[in-house]
Structure formats: C-alpha cells, structure tokens
Length: 300
Length: 307
Image 1 (spheres, rainbow over the protein chains, first blue to last red):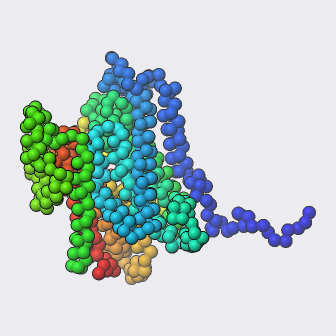
Image 2: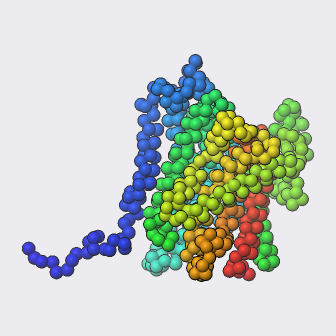
C-alpha cells in the first residue's frame, strides 16, 4: 500500500464552522421544516385517499342526523343537513389546496415574466411595469379581489383568478430587484459577451440564479392565497353550496356557534394548520437558501 | 423637506390616475347593464331602460364616458347608488366613521402587541421568550381572521358573556373586532421590531450608553427602541392598508356598519357605483398613508436626506 503524501480534501477537512451544507440538506436537517413537510405530505395523501377513507358522501344529507357532536361514527360531528363534517373536510380540502396552488401559479408566472422584462430591459418598459405594480399595490388585496369578482361574477374559478391577479405585483417587484442585481454579475456579462440572446440569458442564466427567492415567495404565497380565497368563500362570493370548501364550511357553521360550535371549529382548524405548515416551510426555505438569515449565525 | 413633499405629491398623481383608470376598465367589463339593473325591481320596460341609459350617459362612446368619469372624480362625484338611489359619496361618508374607528383601534392593538413582542424577543434573544414571540407571530399570520373572530365570539360572548357579539354600541363592541384584526398584523410588526432592535443593539452608541453606566432599561427604551422603531413606521403604513382590507371580513362577522360591509353588500347586490367608490377610497387612503409614512420617515431620521 502506498502512502499518500497529501491528504485528499474531504468534507471533514473543512473546519466545521466554515462548512455550510447545501440548501436541501439544511431544510431536511431542520426539525420544523421536516414537521411541516410531513404534515403537508400526510394531508395531500389523506385528501387523495378520501373516497377510501370515509363511507359517507360529502353532499348526502342524512335526515335525523343533524348537528351530532364529534363521536366514533362521525369524527368531526355532523352539520345542519346531517352531512359528515370529516368527509366534507377531506373533499373540501382538495378544493382549498388546489385553489391555493393554482392561484399562486396564476400570480407567479406573469408576475415573474413582468419582473424579468422590467429588470432586464429597463427604460420605458421598467417605468411602465413599475407604475402598473404601484397601481395594483394601492388596492388592499381582498378589495382588489372583490372588485375583480364583481366584474367577473361570483364562483370558484373567478375567486382563483381574482386572488391570482392580486398576487402578481409581489412577484414582479421581487424579480425586478433580483434581475437588477444579477445584471451586474460577471456571469451575465459573460453570457452577453459570447452572444447569447436576451431570452436565453433571462431564462437559462438569470432565472435559475434567482429562483430561490421566487420559490420562497411562492411557498409563502400558497398560505396567503388559501387565506384570501377562503375569506372570499367565507363571504359567500366564491364556492356555492352545497360544494364543500373550508372557508365556505366555516361560513355555514357561523349561525350555529352557540349550539354546534364543531361545525365551524373543524374547517377553521384545518385552514389554520395548513397555512401554518406552509408558512413555517416557507420560513425554513428562506433560512436555508440564505445562510445569513439563519438564526444560528450570530449578528443577524 | 417641502420640496420633497411636493415631489412625492406629484409622484402620487400617476398612481391615482392609474387606479381610477383600472377601476373604470374593470367596471366596464361588467356583464350587467347598470340601467337595466336599476329598473329591474320595478320591472321597467325596454324604453324606460333606454331612457335611463341615455340620462346616465351610458350610451355615449367609451372615451366620452371615461373623460366624464375622470372629470366627475376630480369634482368628488362618485355617482348614485343603484340600491339606495343616494349619492355614493353620502353612502360612504355615513359608513366611514365606523371603519376608521375599527382600523385605528386595530392599529393600536397591532402596534402595541407587535412592539412588546418584538422588544421581548430581541432583548431575550435566543431564549424561550424569543422562540415564543416567533411562534406567536407565525401563528398570527396563519390564523384566518374569520376563524379568530368566531372563536372569540364563541368564548367571550356566548360562553362567558363578557362582550357583545355584534353591533356598534360603545367601546365594548369594539374590543373583539380590534383584537382580531390587530392580532393578525401584530406578527409582521413584531418580526420587524425584533430584527431592527437587534441591529441597533449592536451599534456604537449603545455601547457608549452602557459604558456611561445607564441601566439596561434606559438603554433599551430610551436609546435603542427610539432608533429601532423608525423602519417599523414603514411597515405600519403598509399594515394600515392590510387592516382596511381586513375590515371587510371583520365588519361582516361582527355586523358592524362600515366600508368593508358596504363593499360586500354592494357586490352581492351588484351595486357597482358603490363598489367603485369604496375601491377608489381605499386606494386613495393607501396612497396618502404611503406619502405620510415617507414624510414621517424623512422627518424622524435626520440621516435620510431626500433632496
């Protein structure tokens, strides 16, 4: 066996305080992030497996079974029409989560595109887009969403669209700032020098490098979108009865708070836990992608 | 300073014009015909609808309507409510005090709760108090306002009977709505106070204050917090807009008269001039708040020179 004269640099050779593990490992090493991911994964599995998990129909009314408190046969009790609340939670969750994710996609895709254009091309396109963002940000989210619903009419698709549109300016502002900073980086100058097209520079060079902050905002926005969409459903301008959706279910239980508080307690708890998990995951992602923000680093 | 205020005022004009235009565009996308809606209750004939359309100017070309709309806005005219047949300005003016009362009370709750939590978290940095404050602020942003409201109504009115569940009589009826709305935005304020205070606590003038032998309480309250609160003012301005949006849900749940409830009812009754008026007002308030925040910022922090 030959003796190695030079030690091969290994991870152990790097002093412990200097080694920063990659973001994915930092997320997975964070117990809060793990708990949030496990909760959300478990929730998605439950929602997908809903038909196998419950013998009840979310819309079927059971006469004589109205307002039963939580018990073995009805884990979350029954509502005004004798419908099993746990079953409605499972089916309603499908709608609530999909609304959150789709609304974020509607906000993130055009929002990012506008931010890329404003930050990269500058000049009049930047001024025009910044002005549009300022105008949209002047409306409180829920009022902008309500105005769009007033124009398009109530209903679930319009709620998704309204919340999505209201979220666009946040992405535009974030991406614009990131692109402005990235434009001065050597890798972008190098790409310009070798003759890459603008589209290639934006999509293949800049976008992957600024993807982290966009992902963090999108994650946090899923919680934001769920809260706003369920508020609109709660106000009665979205999902129409008897379709189950968490915000709409809360509204149904509102009138029976004195005698049957469980009708609104279950969907309220479901919204809170889901949004909490999403927000915690978003915070952990932000910490992982930006080590300076991590609590363990002193001086931040 | 005056030049700065003037410049910011001029800068707000394009945004307000954009807001007015966006509202006009959205309102003209509406599927219904306002004239037909106005007469739908009395079952007006086609001729009556056409006459009303003409008297409202709805049969004019769009650019003419847009010009008249902007001109009316400049004169403070917002049209007539389709439901109550009264000027929108009057309808809004009647509902405004309730909303202002709620928004200001909620802002007080948010600012005091957020500051206390943020200061505790920063001073006890890294202890369980810091963790608790962080947990509370995440829970604050994750709780739906409408659920917190229902929980409080269930506990404080139905179970304990301490506070009225609905209405607008006296201070007692303001406590729950203000708590619900204020708690929702206290989290964001707490986070910022914490971050800002931690940064200030590392500054040289804090070391000087400590070296002079001042007590920790004086160092934090008189020296550090005063400086740390400056960036917090910006966020409070933004939070005010969030609170204004939050009144939509809060007023509906607590059956309080106000702008938010007016908006929801206007949408359900398809009272478009009122919707338009409320949205324009909210945007105007937001723009004005932003202006006030910017000016306050320049005034409070002598290091900032805008001119």
